[in-house]
Length: 259
Image (cartoon, rainbow, N blue to C red; front, top):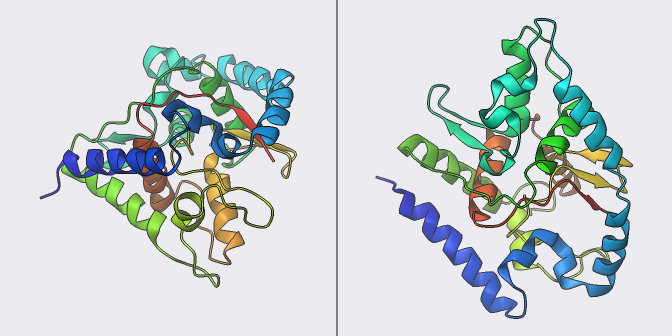
């Protein structure tokens, strides 16, 4: 029978791995992604963060968050603490639904429970609402719980996907974000696995807009020439659950910018 010790041992193992491999990098610094490995790139990124391109996304996300549904309720009615400062608790296991619920998935469930049409995933309004909710959670420490056998099994499914090779290039997520962290791939340094989830949603220069982490999942699959799964598929939700649990103890610092 699985126990929570399996996951907690994983989390400690990965923290120890990065600590031993990069002894000059403090644990909390991993929230900055690949910039922990490139001081010059980090300085440029920090300059961008002074006047971030996602600023308008936060403003629009707040406006959407506070705009009443047709029935007069708002998103606040669906979330703990009225939806403010709770990003660090997602994804979470829902015992009633027997499934991992990401923040974006919960946003759409809120809409559906209030007789509203679900938003398209990946970018646009849902990414902006999520960006606003992340902004209200900055500095809060990630605290993902595995409380049942089913939740641990979901975690393990996410872990399996992260380390499974796929696509014509026969690569796993871990090939880039664990094994080759700090090594250049096509002139880019992949972000390390540790802290990989803390800064989303992200405004990417490549996208010229703000997107969710599952948009990046789909992009990674495409890059290794594998079939991209649907947004908020069980596999992607479990993957996000696994990655976020591994970053327990790190602060939320999203939204952010990346290349």
